[in-house]
Length: 219
Image (cartoon, rainbow, N blue to C red):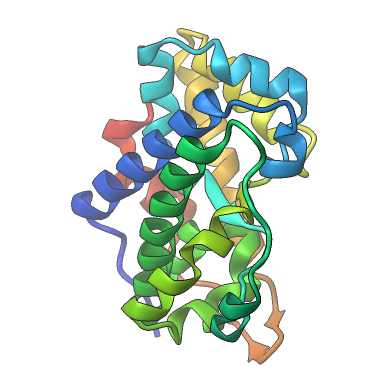
């Protein structure tokens, strides 16, 4: 079964989520950014130095910049003992609210549209079935635990974030477009041949179609 290209409202939601995630990165008060978000200190410093137009470019990339290393089970909430580090309290509450919003977006995408799920999930594709099964109440109950599992998408890729940040401070239209398309390719590639519950077919939508849907948002 084929899938339709996500509409403008979907990309607007992605932009809002990306902007909030970049804001979380910029406002993080501690020094353990690699532990918390997966980015090393040098990349984090570059994110913090971005000005509003550069943040706007990052936010407008046509895929989620945030994901989760894993997700807690609902049953684990009663055993939760981990607390934010000193000075992280206000930031942690913002991260908790963001994690709930992010889980809701990914859950709805996983339930209703394979291409949206591919763009949303990226490296978190293995969590799609788990997210799709969550109720709104479940999401709220595990949001605090999920917040400490937030990760920058593709943080383990040696080129993605350096290239994206280089493009963000560049006025080169082609460089910016290529940086955005790299994330789409990585997202779709991670919709690999199998998950823990079976085979996942690659969406029958081309990267060029996705680029066309979000073309007004790449620069």
